[in-house]
Image (cartoon, rainbow, N blue to C red; front, side):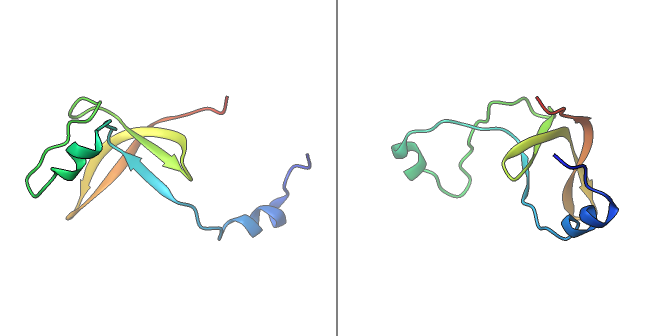
Length: 84
């Protein structure tokens, strides 16, 4: 594999990626999904205030904490995940 020089790396700088912040997950039956409505609560597998996973194109790259930025939410990175 050839290491990218500055010119080759520049080609990748404008490639769009999907970044997802995952608060947690839950397994539910279809019948329970169909019962969801306004005000329903779905219990996740994480503790409140615990770290959130930051995924890039569905691949875990970091963990962090939720922060408020004006009226939006963000994630402050607290741990980078090394490649296996």
